[in-house]
Amino acid sequence: MAGWWSFGGAFLLFFGILVSYLYKINWIKDLRLEGDNKTVLANHLESKKRKLGKLPPVYPNGWFALLESSQLGKGQVKHVAALGQNFAVFRTNNGTVRILDAYCPHLGANMAEGGRVKGDCLECPFHGWQFRGSDGQCDYIPYADKVPHVARTKTWKSCEANEIIFVWHHAEELEPHWQPQTNSHVSNRTWRYHGRNEFLINCHIQEVAENGADSAHLSAVHGPLVFTKIAHFLSAFVRHSWTNINWTPHNSFLESLNSKETELERQDSENLRHRAYMTLRHRLVLFERFEVLQLDVNVKQIGPGYVELMMHTTLGSMCIFQTVTPMEPLLQKVTHILYSPPLLAPCASLLFLGECLMFERDVAIWNRKKFEKRPLLVKEDKSILAYRRWYAQFYSQHSPSYHSAIKSLQW
Ligand code: FES
Ligand SMILES: [Fe+2]
Image 1 (tube, rainbow, N blue to C red):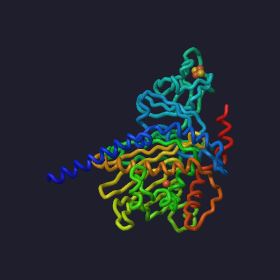
Image 2: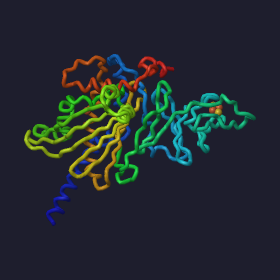
Image 3: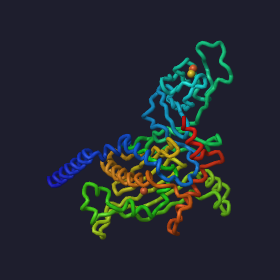
Image 4: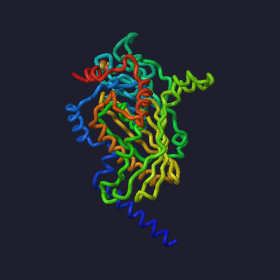
């Protein structure tokens, strides 16, 4: 018994020293807080010299994360600039989230900066006009006898799932035909929140999720040991192995038209064609011989900007929600939010740190690459083409191009 205690104590001591060392060299801090603005700015400047390639439209159609639920209390309003829009996101006192165009149609004040939530309405700070969150209609003008019919502002559909607030963005203004679903472990609170990170990345949104279909980058980018920065000597005899890799779109619509599926199955395929799946198995390989720390990952890509990663270890399962939102045509905000059973928290945190460091390697490539519209591929890369065909469903006739989107950002 005493042996176990001293083993446990030694382990905790080692872990404590490791974590404080990582804090000291700013690894955890950099990865878990708001991102390093200096680096982002530098990347941004560098991007002016960078070749862009022939880009797909920059704002796809779908649900995109604007805030986390904890960032918007009852009666609060926040301004979020993303997807070429300025959103005033507010929460009424009964908890409903509403999204209006931030600029007041009266004289253009930004209603999210100093505006007040009044019932279901947002009150503009400039002259006190009140706009309904449900349909954008002006309900009240404090100094006018009559509210003109045309006094209204634009509204956006919102939904909340897994403690994330999403907005529906569609270039043709079509209504949503799907939405992110709440994970039952999160909603019944059997799994708890254990941390988040946030990155700003200078690349096209499509590049981020393309990683899932690009199996060949796994050993090149994610093969070397994750902690080599602090223990370089370990990399000679420890590496990560990635196997059982498979990327598939939800049974594609065209395929199902040709098959003998029932009408119900065909409808299901059509309803879920915004989803794609990836599986992979991770192992740590010691001395090219011994395999330890098996981790099975099931990834669900849900629309153009949201991913759920389920990770299964021998100790239990945990989940990371990834959101990708275009803040500008080539500036993506990516967040990862971790949930696990309470008892698994230390293990989940360590895995999360590993995931952060691995993701940082992808970020370094995305920040500098060009988008290759006609990539030179070998047959083992075929999932990349399948991925691009799948992702194309999120673009439509009026989806903004890079040039039209960039023009609207210029004063
Ligand atoms: S600008 Fe909003 S009420 Fe006047
Ligand atoms: Fe990657």
